Amino acid sequence: MSHEYIALLMFCSLMLMLMTGQRVFAAVGFVATVASLSLWGNGGIEMPFNSSVTLLNWYPLLTLPLFIFMGYMLSESGIAGDLYKMFHVWMGPLSGGLAVGTIFLMVAISAMNGLSVAGMAIGSSIALPEMLKRGYDKRMVSGVIQAGSSLGIMVPPSIVLVLYGMIARQPVGRLWLAGVFPGLLLAALFLIYVLVRCKLQPHLGPPLAKEERQMEPGQKLRLLGAGLLPLIIIFSVTGLFMMGVTSLVESSAVGAAAATLAAIVKRRLNKKVLDAALHSTLYVSCMFMWIILAALCFGAVFDGLGAVKAIEILFLDKWGLSPWGVLIMMQVSYIIMGMFLDDTAMLVIVAPLYIPLVISLGFNPVWYGVLYTVTCQIAYMTPPFGYNLFLMKAMAPPEITLVDIYKSIIPFVTLMIIGLLILMLFPQISLWLPNLYFGS
Image (tube, rainbow, N blue to C red; front, top):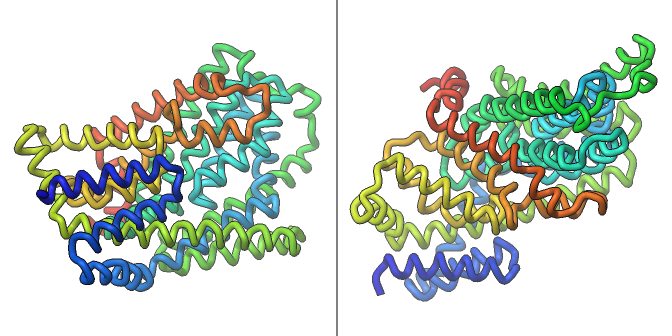
């Protein structure tokens, strides 16, 4: 059997294993282990061992549990809720103001956590009931929360970009900075859409009632001060890192310490909050560790087969695609896979194939990491099995049906596709900031 057919068999086996409902790391690791032992016998035993050593020697991996802990500490202690109260009062007078405040909240949560699941959980528990109670259209509410939570994998400290950096061997700091302007671009597109749509159709997002807006100036300023605390924590992470005061790992430690200190100052740090934050951090961190380990082993087998070269020959020589044609086809494949898989599974499956090919075609791998992340955001919200669609259904009240959720994402997915095209046409939107900070 040729190497090309072996690679195809591995890919199909992996897809089949994932369709059985097995955990991602178990499916990937099983296929990689069976393939390595079948191809190289006892020599294949060294592959998972070498992968584990590579993983444990990867110093930036220390950032993973620290950033995750920071996000969960802010969530469990209710500090993220204070931020929404601030947006609630200050943005409420606008038509669609609460939806705008929710998007701001999601951007802030993204900068505190880096996981879309956390943004979805906080948005569904805090913002969703508030908007529904005040007469917001349920499809507008559902769309805003799903779109806003998807920003979690773009804005630093994005955990997805950390994983991409580890698998693609790209600097995490450069990837983070590359995600700043694209994340803000998508957030701006969402904000413009909400404001314009609610201005034209006020019943979709009515302003707060006058009695709810009546508040003493001193109270509003105190509320503004409470909401600024999470922004200070964000600055302690990304601001100090960009100023060169802290390294990547040090910034994650500063963020975790600042979140804990904030909970202490607010008198909200108790055994229940600490237990919940630590348990969630341990669960998510271990899950990512196993996935990265399996991905490294899987990638080693693919490299040994020469599958990357085979894919390059298929795309360029046999199919005659141009470099941009190959890139577009990659993005389409991500969207199709994203209907069935989460971002980590997609990265594990195709990163060993796509990233070397992207580099060989002359594209910047940091810029491609941003394109991959935006495409994952689109795939998250693409029917029939987009990841965010089912998270939303699980967290939404019964009056928001699955049909409502499907229809709610149409305008936001359209905006994200427009954002993706803009980033493809103008790579400097992604690359200007990291090139400015680190040099070209």
